[in-house]
Image (cartoon, rainbow, N blue to C red; front, side):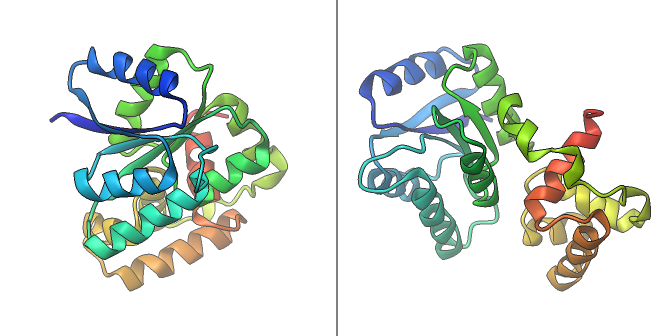
Amino acid sequence: MTIRVLIVDDHPVVRRGLRALIEVQDGIEVAGEAGDGPAALALAAEHDPDVILLDLKLPAMSGLAAMSGLAVLTELKARDAASKVLVLTSVTDPDSAAQVMRAGAAGLLYKDVDPDALVRAIRAVHDGHLLLAPEAAGPLLRPATWSPGLDALTTREREVLAELARGRSNREIARALNVSEKTVKTHVSSVLGKLGVQDRTQAALFAVRREHGA
């Protein structure tokens, strides 16, 4: 299966470089390029890319606003699998990283990333993994943030947590576990309470941290 990537960046040189990198990869192709948020939404609606490489600093509409538009687009089209957003930015402050992940991004990398690592990241987020640059993950994974409540989770709640770590929506989790969305919402609420975290993004980050032994 070919991974179709939409490149969104306001700098033509950056778009050209990303296109050149992607076009030589096996199983990955460029679905289109956009230089601003409105164009990105239009191309996403037209081409249904698998992965969107998204800069945060865009004219006319910020990257975060574009992500909100993409979420609405997914709902309107009733898609079971939304495009995975991989943010590629030069904005390095921790608040932006937290906002990006809470807005539903599948990953965040900085523009100094190694090209091979970027390609691996595209494949990883396409496969449903949550991915963060180490510099971004650190502030979001402060030890004091987490409660040692993992042992309190039931088997089903652990399964739900694993699905959250893959970036799955409630609908997708319900389908994967063969339960109702209402049941999933109940389990998610219980997981958040037991882990002592505020939202599903923090729960997913918790799971990723534990998986990597952090």
